[in-house]
Image 1 (spheres, helix red, strand yellow):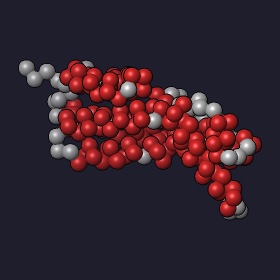
Image 2: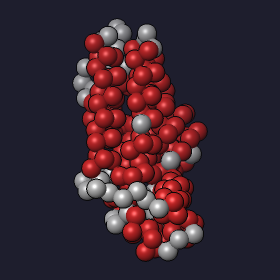
Image 3: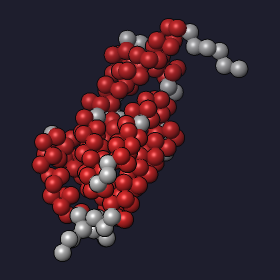
Image 4: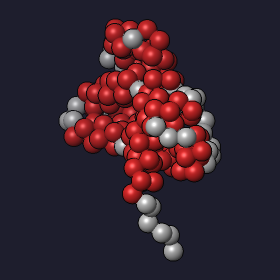
Length: 185
């Protein structure tokens, strides 16, 4: 039987998660754990008492934040036009990933010890595949475009946005989408 967490311990845990979100958004998932503890006003030992590894911290922090993809998938499913569903999904994803470096790295990195994070990423990719399948069935996606091809393009655009700012991916997206669209003869 697990004892309930003391109020001060629960408060410290919440502050650590809040500050970790800020550090990982700014610096990526390799952000300093010492910086997180400092911003939370606790010792590094307190951080490790709550989260014994970086992956434990990632597992506590990122899966709920990745649930935004569930909402993007719902929006895409509600959109009657399959192509608009895809472009909306992609725009939402790129906006999230360029605003939050931690989310970008969560999607593009390999974090096998962070089981909850891995499951959230798999769920996100399942949503993405469903949107792509719908566009394929409508005959709007070029037939040689695999899910992985499109995911790589999304990743490249998110890196562009991370390095050159959101305007860069927004200006480039129409060209990428035009390249993905099936030839209409």
